[in-house]
Amino acid sequence: MYQQAGVRFNLASPKQLGEVLFDKLKLDASAKKTKTGQYQTGEDVLLKLAVKGHQIVDDILTFRELTKLKSTYVDALPQMINRKTGRVHTSYGQAVAVTGRLQSNNPNLQNIPVRTERGKEVRKAFIPRDDDHILLSADYSQIELRIVASISGDKNMCKAFKDGTDIHTATAARVYNVSEKEVTKEMRYKAKSVNFGIIYGQGAFGLADNLGISRTEAKEIIDNYKKEFPGIQKYMDDTINFARENGYVETLMGRKRWLRDINSANFTVRGFAERNAINSPIQGTAADMIKLAMQKVHAAMKKEKMKSKMLLQVHDELVFDALKTEVNELKPLILECMQSAMVLPHKVPVTAECGEGKNWLEAH
DNA sequence: TCTCTCACG
DNA sequence: ACGTACGTGAGAGAC
Image (cartoon, rainbow, N blue to C red; front, side, top):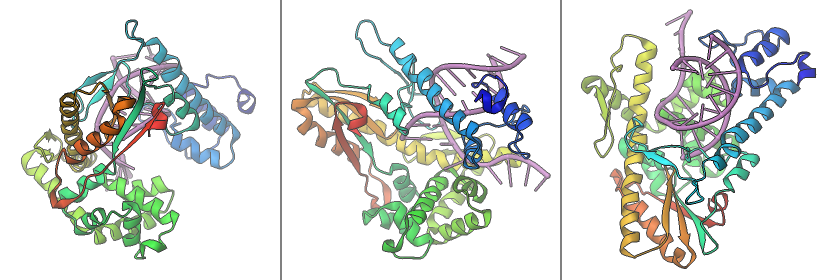
């Protein structure tokens, strides 16, 4: 990388990297800067340059992946092994995250890598306590989208979940006005992005940037989406209006999030508050649900005098150190507790899946 | 201590 | 013309 740049510099410094890429090598004349005047060198920016064949950018991306994994996980986690137990123990914050989610720190065990091949190797390091145990992982399937469907009561989205079809395929079929059989990978991929974007209040600009398509195409997709799922649009409008009048939004369980900026005269500031208004009831309801499930699971395990332990919660997933002789009883117990923890309106089904393995990666 | 980046859902 | 997808924690650099 030094040879390609023609200069030695700190590869880990975004400031220096930006100056090398954009001042010295002039890889992008229209490179954007942050509010403090540095060039932006985030992954999305670098990926666009790497596609154009700039080898040094590709190398930086690899460097970033490796140094992140090493510093945050490979070097740090062994330092945090408890002397008495020989294990790592996280702490959970129950009243920190504004939406009602749990927060994990010291160490954060809610962001253990899983996406890349090298990241998966880190996840494999999480193992059961001994040979008599296995790791068991149970996670909710598409929980936030199911909550969107049920809170909004959108007929078409509720129907898709009741029919048990793949939600992204069902969405693509409607947005592109084809049968589900005719949905291509490309169409499903884009529909998936729209589904997630909706949860966060994304607009045409964000979708276009995300998918690398034109704003015109993005707008068409979103317009079609709103036409096919009119209940979703109504939910967003109603929720923002509720927030404007009351100054807060709430989850199905009544957990409130106050939004002091919802009536701000500043477009940008108000926009943030509006997206918070849309997202918080969804993310927060999912958080309420899994908390209820955790209580239910714990009580049921206690009643059955089980020796297995609930170890971790990762927003839509519960991880257990399961005694092998209890697994057959434990699995259905967990799934039943998770699925019945909160009944969603409009009869939207809640489903959870469970896997087991000799490490956390296999358990998925 | 702030900023930027990046790991997860 | 503006800014543009939510919620977190942590490490490195820069000051």
